[in-house]
Image 1 (cartoon, rainbow, N blue to C red):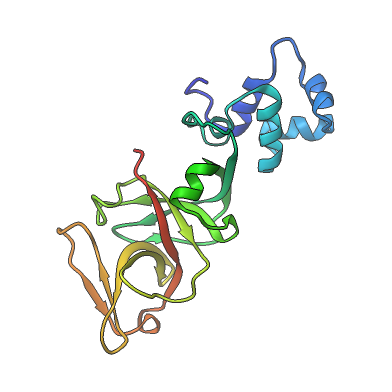
Image 2: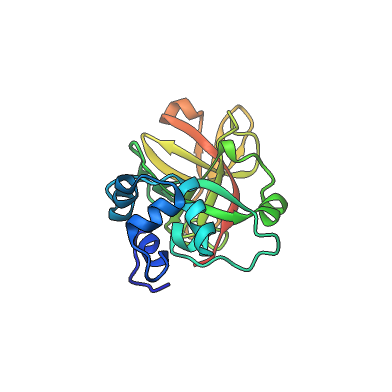
Amino acid sequence: MGESLKSVADRLKSVIPEGVTQDQFADELGYPVSSFKRWLSGSQDLKASIVAKIAKETGSDLNWILNGVPSVDVAGGELVLIRRFDIEASAGAGAVINGEPQIAPVAFERDWFQEHVGLSTENLSVITSRGDSMFPTIRPGALLIVDHGIEEFHGDEIYAFTIDGDLYVKRIQKILGGGLLIQSDNEAYIDQEIESPESVNMKLIGIIKFIGNWV
């Protein structure tokens, strides 16, 4: 599991058993050789289910193949996959969001996921934080699980939202009269009050359900 294996395709190639050709391995798994070689070259996107099957057949660490990060030990071995978008949500200055692509999903141990998140994966995604305005609650580079299954701001929570297309993660409170108070947990940043989301072209992306400060 060397650090030089920077892509999913590179890590997939590294788990092919020694002495087995790519053609032989594709046949053993029941995949067309041509498709398998495109996956290994990185020229064709991989479904998470395919990676999961290869990990199972080779006894490899699924999370390492998908994300380059080894899994913690899991008792039951059941994993939950959450889609991940290639976008950094700014906890400082805005990060532009424009047709963000999906990248390799993040794998979580099922029992841990049920205890700490406990939601259907259908409306969830993982994004990355940047900036220090929400420090120490959110560290730069933290992985954030976002619940997209809400339609309005409803209390003192941390949300992902856009203003004029820039993506932010901030704490938001409702205030009397229908306005919103946008707050940073870092005291070096000032709070901002707005009359309404419409007044600043503000759109709700989701509520932050888990903060992974693993950096």
